Image (cartoon, rainbow, N blue to C red; front, side, top):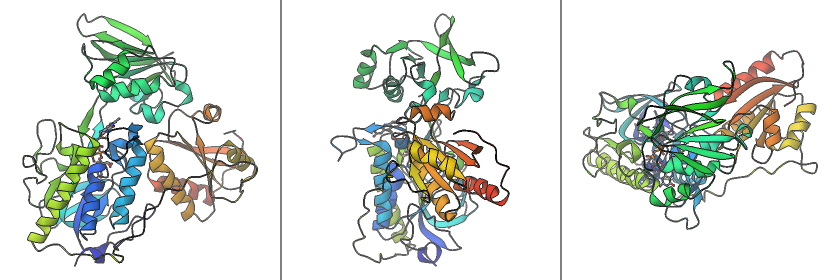
Length: 487
Ligand SMILES: Cc1cc2nc3c(=O)[nH]c(=O)nc-3n(C[C@H](O)[C@H](O)[C@H](O)COP(=O)(O)OP(=O)(O)OC[C@H]3O[C@@H](n4cnc5c(N)ncnc54)[C@H](O)[C@@H]3O)c2cc1C
């Protein structure tokens, strides 16, 4: 019994989810933000061969919250700052290099009433584990406005960094709601794209750091609307499919006011991802996991917590990483003390370097390859659209979009699995806004599936790999009649 009989040690790579069989793991880490990856790194170096359930949709994407930001300037070791998605790619690579095994899915249920603990994943796998580190972080809040659902991704977004470059937002009036660091960062970021940015703040002050608040207040392209709350959103006409205005109410006078905007970005805080643990572990009134003061242990032996899920106060990348380290060390000590650890020696004492990620070059007349499974840019898109007889996946991305970062390897993996029966093209909407406009792209990532010059299906946001594969396989099995819509 032990880790090697269930998931092959060191077999995980960014593109290969190990399939668990019956057996008991030493340690499962739930979550892949800075806390989860750091916990995995330490546990892997302790030869515990940890399994990381990275999360996929329900509580955020693999890599966690830093996948939705641009420059991280305060993570030690990067004097010139680093992009959030790049930082998380590096943490992932380091955890993998030392033998962590990743399952790119959500944990749907956790049963802590029996030992070993049981974790049921969204893909139906049951994993048994002696110890558990909960590092599920936090998710962006929504306002729940009456027309919010209708205009979600049609003008409303919870990620300015992901969606700001969308053509519909360019040169339009935009609004950000919130008064903290995220709201200020997003407002400043959006001045790159919008003609003017309105920051809607519930009180008469910003909760952001002084430096961030100063940047907002000194920026002529940003107007701050103090003491205002949002009442609803609306389109130009009752059946319009894009946001045209927001209605604000003054919290002191009660007076309402309409503001014409083409984009509304939420930056109103986060809620800890603890729904999974309700009734099994102690939560504080705001839903944060309760641990022993200043320590990673929960009240249940063998269950540890790390990062924002148990931290209502500091909530930083570095504090999350530090608590991930503590949780892994505590878990290792507990497993050893209980005589439960099954040590899995690494094949190589010093694993091979993680290397740098591969980047796809923009296709042009010189390097375009009609048979390549993955290419980049409008040149390849036009050629494949007109000449290829295979299903064509077009993914619209923007450089700072963390979710795009997560989705691209999934799509490439689907195309590899299909062995050349379909092809893919990536379009950077910041570099090629006209293509995005023509394609009706309203946010990133957007994926469109074309076949015989016709769009067959469209997806917005991160979706499970199986959805894309099933759609392509259905087209291959029963090809539709040729038509003709231009991408
Ligand atoms: C816009 C923005 C900008 C920020 N900028 C900075 C900055 O510049 N510097 C800084 O230090 N901090 C910054 N922060 C804060 C920082 O991102 C967080 O403190 C940090 O990411 C917390 O790490 P974590 O590992 O605890 O959780 P998260 O990063 O929230 O990661 C949680 C992980 O758990 C996974 N998960 C959730 N539910 C499940 C489930 N059911 N099953 C499996 N997995 C699950 C998610 O998919 C995710 O991978 C920023 C945050 C935001 C939102």
